[in-house]
Image (cartoon, rainbow, N blue to C red):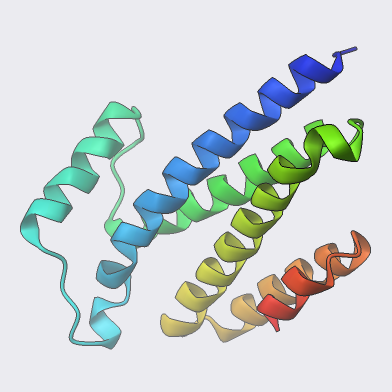
Length: 148
């Protein structure tokens, strides 16, 4: 069993990785929906995102699939961090807990928007509903409202 310091450290690492992956996904999102709009990614940004894929030793994927993967990983890491903080006293985990919940809500929202913009409306609705149910179950009404 992990002590409070170890749990807090593991949650911090999960949050750091989730922040990084969410930032990459945010940078890639205009390219994901380019077929639905006039937005295009700067070639230097594409090169940077491809380099990040290689450095993380990810299997090369088309940008839309990679963006989804980064957002799904962000969600998974955020959930892992929340789980690691669950046993800690609120005064020890409060700020990190708030940050992880906010990151999780943003990632859920971003992934839902990608699904909707690419015509996967059923998946977008199912995804949003799952997020709302999860935040309602944890009594986080503010984050549940963000997904509605």
